[in-house]
Image (cartoon, rainbow, N blue to C red; front, side, top):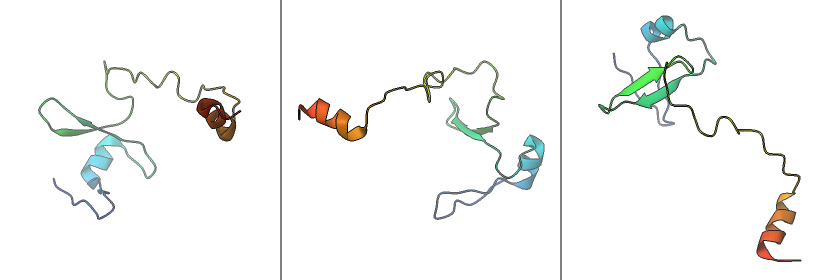
Length: 79
């Protein structure tokens, strides 16, 4: 099964694949390059034994109260 990449870098997942994965509009998918150099499509969380994303545990946890301008002034030594 083949498809064409649009000028925006988008592809249409063929209907047989969408049906097999039960993908609906808005569904998340994950593209992975395997050791053989092939691109494989996964539903997120469907891969067993996958290496956890080292950033996932801390994503969205920052509690820094600095405003960007204040932090940049501090880092530049502009007091």
